[in-house]
Each structure stands twice: as structure tokens, then as C-alpha cells.
Length: 412
Ligand SMILES: [Zn+2]
Image (tube, rainbow, N blue to C red; front, top):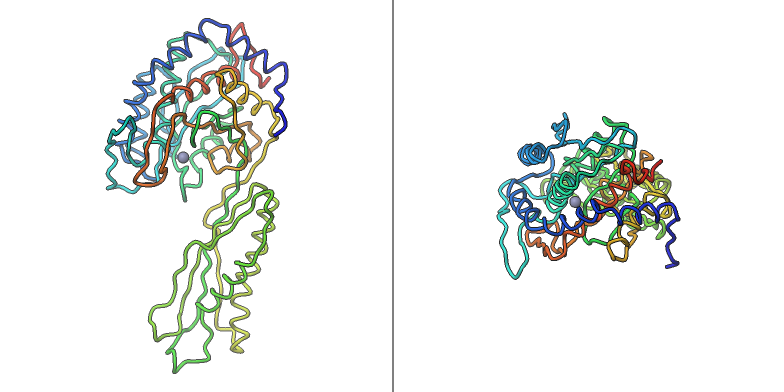
């Protein structure tokens, strides 16, 4: 990869920050605060929080926000927890968030187990670690006495995972139009920078027909055969490798008895692309194929008995911002200031999709530490060095919000 260039203005903003005693103290505070953050992570992971049912964890998170002295702490009508650390009012408002929901249903054993220095629990990383890391950032800011130009909003968001489709983040930004930049904490590493949003579209496709006896009603077109015809054609689609564009028929259901012509068949398809235009093209091709499945099955039997209906069941917008935009440069520089080599990650399905698709500068930064088995019951987290995550957020927030009398917001 060609050398990444950070412009002089951004480099000097960070150089000034790194020389400030209050910033140095803040960074040292975050390292020392790691055990406290891990204790909070262990507490939060035990509050089950499946997507669409995050209330209990949200309430506890709001209590943390209140006890840390944030202003205007509240749970919005969507279930997101918000709290603000006020600035001087002469800079842009910036957001630091992590998501409250996990992929695990109620009843999952979420009690963390410690073994060989690692923590094992479903959800211990994704995204409980993000929630805990951000509490550490609030504590460090409060302890530092640093006065920012712009307000910093902290949030725990709902509905990031699966069919939640990042709707919590979307609603938060729609309700708070003055947020000028966002940082999400999600994914692994203390070096990763996700700056693109891979779009997702899921469709449910249903074929129906009269059905009948397998032998007696032979000649009746089959919804199941129609679905199979469509899936065969979908399998042959060749979307571009770059920008990365993908599809898979992920679920199928149909028929009711082995000696019967099916009356119904449904499949679900997941399509993704890093580019909104390519996702539109893929969708157009897929929709035509959904129709062709029914048409060709009917033609085979000289009938029109099979019909098809399809429904868009998840729509997450794709978005892109240049890899060399100020926001990404700032995230890069914040990482280098900590002596870490940054890594730009292409694509990504994180809460950052929403701001980017709305034209708001945004990045998703990794949770720090080491992790594995994310989204599985064997999920584990190794906290060694994980304070690098809140350190990175702390520096980037200061550069984005600006520090009164010292550094103007790089967003200005
Ligand atoms: Zn996540």
C-alpha cells in the first residue's frame, strides 16, 4: 500500500494535544483505569440484551452515565441511551457510541468465566467491550478537566445486530441532526479503522399455488419448483469482485407433505455491496429472477397458477467516504500518536453505515485487546492492552470537538 498521508494541519493539532499535560494525564488515567473498565464490562455482559430487548441493559448504562456526571442523560423513544458532556458551545457536536444489543437470545448463559487471563462469555466483546471502553473515556475526560469547544454525546445504541439493521443509530442521528461526526466502537483490534459502509438488502420471496396430490394432480405447477428455478438462476449471478458485492440465498422453506405438490415455498436472500450503485444493479437482477422463477414454472405446465410475492425485509444503506478525508486522517493520526500502525479496513457493516450514508463523517474503531469466537457461545476476550481503545477514542474526540484555547476542531 502506498504511504498514507496525513495533512499538516491535522498532524499539528495532534502534536499540540500530545504535549498538553491534561492530555498526557488523561492517557495515563486510561491505562490505570483498565481494571475498572473490565469490572464494568463483566457486569454489563451479565445483563442479557438481545436485539429489540435492550431495556434492562439500557437502564443500567444510563445509571453509569448519570454517576459519571453527564448532562441530559435519557433513554430516547427508540431505546438508545444518551448523555452529553458539555463543551463551550463554540465547536461541533460529536458522538462516541457502542451498541447495547447482542445476538444471543434470553436464556443464554452469559456469566463470564476467567481462564488463562481471558474472559469467556457470549457478548463479552461484541459489543459489551465497546460500552465499557466508552465509560472509561468519560471518566478520563471528567478527571482531566479538559474543556472542549463542542459537546460530546455518548450513547449506547439499540438494534445494531441482525434484523435490527442499525436502526438505533439511524434514529439517533435523525433525532439529533446537529451531530457533526461520529465514532463507533465495534470490531476487533486497536489498529483498525472502518470508514466504509457495506449496504445490505434482504428479501423474503414467496411462491404460492393451488398444490394437490403428487400423482393425481400432476400437471399443476409447483411453487417449490418455481423457487428452485429462481435460486438456480440467482446462483449464476456474477456481481463485481470490486467494489465487493455478494449474495446468498440463506434460508428456504416450503411444501407440507412428501406426496403433495407444494402450495407454498419461501426463500430469503441476503445481498451486500460496498457500493450503493452495484447494490441497486444486483437488486434489479434479483427481482427479475424472482419473477422468472414463477413465469418459467407456469410456462412448463401451460398454466398461470403460481404467483410470486417478495418483500424487502432489511435495508441498510451503503455509504462511502474517501479514505483520505479529514475524519479518516484524524483517526489515522490518533492511532499513530499511540505508537500503533493503523489499518484501514475496506467495507464493513457497522453503525458507521448510517452516518456515512447521511453524509456525516464517521469511523468505527476496534475494541482493543484480543478476541475470538464473536457471535458464538465460545466468545472470548483477552484484555491485555485493551486500554489502547479508549485512549484512541479520547484523542480523536478531543481533535474532533476541539479543546478550548488550544486546538480548534479539525472539523472546522
Ligand atoms: Zn457489534
